[in-house]
Length: 146
Image 1 (spheres, rainbow, N blue to C red):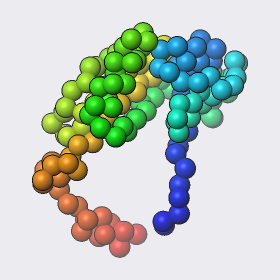
Image 2 (spheres, rainbow, N blue to C red):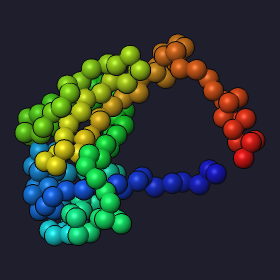
Image 3 (cartoon, rainbow, N blue to C red):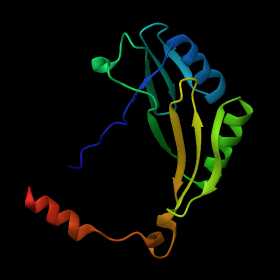
């Protein structure tokens, strides 16, 4: 399938939509698009997040913490966003670091303990793909079995 596919818009469980939206706006630089009770939306660039309280959660089962991965274009972009979020008063759980699995990342939390892992995958910049195994044959075999 080669059709264009839109970005996902995750549902983030929060205790209070208004308080959460204000935190996302003030500390994380999102735009509070709509909603104060039940369900609301914040966005930044091409990223949209639905904030839902217990009365509006899909199936009523979403549980904290939800982990959202945000893929940036460079290590510098990761470091810059960390600086901006830190200056805005965001709850930083882990500072930027290049990990052995070839991701340069940091982690931030919202008021309800949901986590944002902000990263840049630099394995593709390394001569051997950062040691990542080419598992194309295993993928093809799995497809053939089903």
